[in-house]
Image (cartoon, rainbow, N blue to C red; front, side):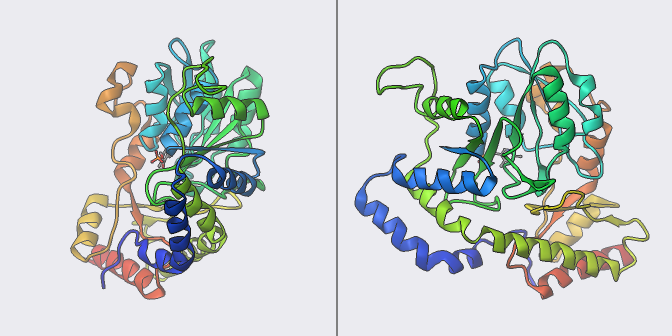
Length: 372
Ligand SMILES: *Cc1c(COP(=O)(O)O)cnc(C)c1O
């Protein structure tokens, strides 16, 4: 039995009858950029996330860039974030010419360690970017406490965490900004690239709206230098339709996580410490990924691949060790938990349509590996 890490085709089959006429209608209208479809999507996503405003973006990466631009963050400024994330988190800081200050992760959640945040603040610090990795929110109490004390902007990288909650509050509603991605492999994906910036403050929303359209207001008059960060109508329409299904899909992911817990408990792998499953310490983990720690991780990956089980390493090289960030002056050993996670972890299939038999097969193949 082949088990892919992610298969989007069953999801498409579920929404096809709704999505295809909508796409055709937009084609016939020949109105593609911004417009009512994007506004509808912005209102729906913002409401879902508990934010007052949503501003559609070209991607999650650009949402991060626009948030930093809107706050005027640039050369001479420092931004605190985690070295254990997708590249875009730190790429955005670097693209604006600001300096990244890393704080290591909590080994239990893989998210930035709230206990270590305060030590990273300097007189130049302007913002914190907590990343809600794999679908579980970072310690927002710690982030907001440090931010309030030092008057820092908080930009939540919620690309993997739409609908995740921290003490009943949704990702993207607690900090100054929430950055969302509609990349197809995210829990709410469109049919290409897309993203959204959320916020509570109308002035911030207004600024982001201008910045995404070359800083133009009114048309052809520019007080700010922005860019083309516009979401298009086709992607927005897909997101709006899919959003109605998102809670059901999230429940499917959570059920799969619970199923893995049960299946692994029936092997000796957890008690022997060969495998460690992810811990849900917040009340709503949405499992964009199901990432485990495993002894002899690389051997296990080779074995899974040989048995047609999809897996991936998120992420094999922590960001402080990336060649392009060498000028930040970090070295191996600086963030031991991030480095250890990069060596020990792998993702297992968790998408909503994964069947009982497929999950059982994944665990069987892992068990087979450790029994030799
Ligand atoms: C996917 C992702 C992004 C970037 O989103 P894109 O839409 O692909 O640009 C940023 N941060 C994290 C943590 C992500 O997972």
